Amino acid sequence: MNKKILAILSFALLTIKGPAFGFQQQPISSIDDVMNFYSKYYDFNGSVLIVKNGETIFKKGYGYANYEFDIKTKPNTVYHIRSLTKGFTDVLIANLLAEKKLVLKDPIGIYLPELSGEIGKSVTLKHLMTHQSGIKSIDIDASSRLSKVDYLKQINHSKLLFKPGTSKRYHDFNYVLLGIIIERITQQTLATNFKEFIFTPLDMQNSGLADGESMVKNMATPYYLNQVDFGDDYHHVFPRVTEVGYAFGGITSTIEDLYKWLVASHTGRFKLSRISGITDNEQMRNDMPLVSEPKTIKIGETSKRVYIGDGGGSGFRSLYYYYPDNDVFIIMLSNTYYFKPPRSGGSLLYDAIPPLISQVLFNQTVQQPKIPIAKLLISSIEENKSIRDIISRYQTYKTKPDSYLVNVKQLNRAAYYCLESGKLDYALRLFELNQKEYPESWMVYDGLGEYFFRTKNSSKAITYFRKSLEMNPNAWREERKMFDRRKNILEIIDVNTE
Figure 1 (spheres, one colour):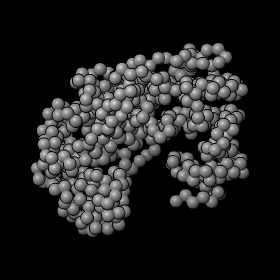
Figure 2: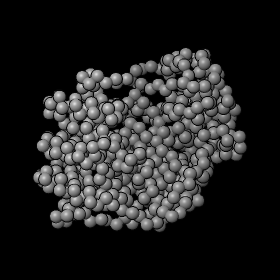
Figure 3: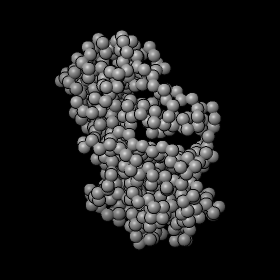
Figure 4: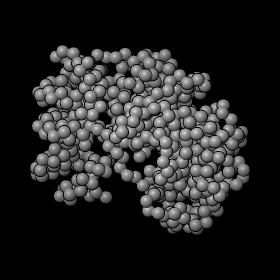
């Protein structure tokens, strides 16, 4: 039995009390309480740094940087920061604009003569930086051995999705083109530009641009945690052609290095003249996307101005909150992508953890988050409790909606865990319970279809799969592994998969 399950069981055995199966509610009164809760119950992996008035008030790692070798996460663990890389690329472009080596309104064909078609003539630098180019997104395949020029030729005569500047469509390929332009103008690699103009001046010694081949010391392994399907465990990230990231998501860094960058770009406290000089130019301030405005959010009963930046992909997540009026930075980096977020429409890093940390920092009352019942049910399953006992526990948890997170995904998660663990009778009972509790959810019919698919009952599998797809035609496209495995069933059902 692995360490993670043992830890869950130990905690469960310590806190289960009597026939009501109630868990002792641990008060949330500190940042460490918040992080320990999400580490225990929601499998948070990552590093957290909080700095107030220039002083570090919290710094810690949670979970594992690598599960195969039991390497725990530390403050100096290195992560891909993904789309936060775009801000660094923006600054390099801003440097070249300030030096008059680029003009923001110039068509990009001036800098990339391979683009002789409509794209080169009508798309400007500003369109790329604001995702208003209309260029159809393509992936950079690191294994294809295609050069950047090959990609330019590939899109040269492709049709635009819309007239540049008339609409917005966020995609990474805009920044691929910006990266190529930077390299052309400076006659240096993008990695050298980042190092020379940002990493070295800011003493970011643990940051770099990934190339897909070089070894990076203290680098975290990326995972996804699918908390509904394929059991209840970590898996390696599906191979992605965009994993290296280049100018749109290729920087690797630590929480402390990222703090140096954020201070420089938001406050100028770490003097980086090429960044602070941008804000001296009013026109550039209006044109440059990296000079953003703060949002106003509610923390308890008070309103706070905050800058929020984030990135994610290929198993990594990055996030920061900066409260300018209080000079507080919250920085979080994670090596786990959560396929099924615990809260509808959001995820751990974005909408769950930062508000609670903020409540602690600003002395607000922190409400105990709900405990996900899937964790508790799985603990009971591992203890070899009877299925009757497990269902009884579920019914008890359901009566306490303020304390426990009870929904269709939680039951589905426990059912899939049984399916993956070979407890087929348990799996069927839980899938059927889920259908009874949530008959309007496509997920319950998909789960039953998967049960019968694996137990070789094709007739019932097709019946339930067809119903799930009628309720949610896009269900199988959400997870590539599931889609690929079920292709033969798709053909039987005669569903259009394009």
